[in-house]
Image (cartoon, rainbow, N blue to C red; front, side, top):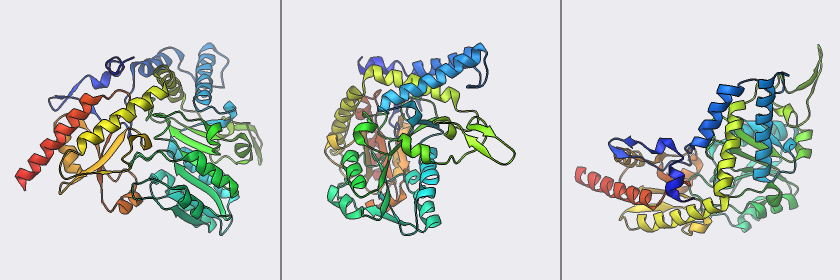
Length: 409
């Protein structure tokens, strides 16, 4: 399947924006949705709309089969041992908060350490900040190297016998850096700590194998991998999930409710209180089918090629600074940059006038912006539906922005 064929599966890309054909380079924020996912949602709402796990009627059975079928697709997608280890959530943020509140709150003692990095998304910083304040724990940061990568020596220096939780993103949403999760997991385990992985930017782009990584928890969102918004996944090792208390209570997650005491269902349902995100899960299952058809290895290779081409072309623009590792094999398909003397929001506005969608701002990573010594950056992020022609449009748009602001000032 070539790129032109793939683009044809995404109806939203077939439009003009401000009089120009759309070039969508903001997939790190949210990906576009292929017709296969849109049709799966349409089918559910047209023919199978019903609650799950409750009724004995045909629609309820079909909805339940599709919902639980999606869970099995997720299990295979990340190579979990059991569907008991797959919890559907609202997204990565909810999943990380579930670990912090459900595992961290009942495990941490005063003086225990939580270790994260400067590159983390706010969703993987704030829950640990709050937990550290509540429990009297110590929040520590792993130092970054100059190019925005992590050395294992820095990891070993940060993690000690007092460390109980290490939480780290697999791929940086700003730098594109691919972190050595498997090695970090071993260091954490050697020191008696568990590792939590934010895979929001990894799951859409590279193969994730939780057993090979030996991570204890892993979180990702559907909307960044061609699925609908509002659906995400928390993976957890079964033994850890079994010992955790749920943090949300209500219907569906209970086994027995008495006047003064209640008991919980078995995994995974004890963490899925209330009516679940049925359509979202079904859409996620359809997205996984779509990505598997193309192949994660093919997607990763395509993005490495695009990142290499983009950096080569962008470096030809005088006054443009690129952040993150230069080796395209060390990063996923995104390039974050700034133009000298031009605010990233102004760059993004001029690009949008040319039909090019990029992201500008702090990218929910203010500690990393401080580390980079900038207030904001512009980011072009690529996915399976982008090609070198899109990069050429980006470069031309940036040259246009540079000329425009040079003339103005």
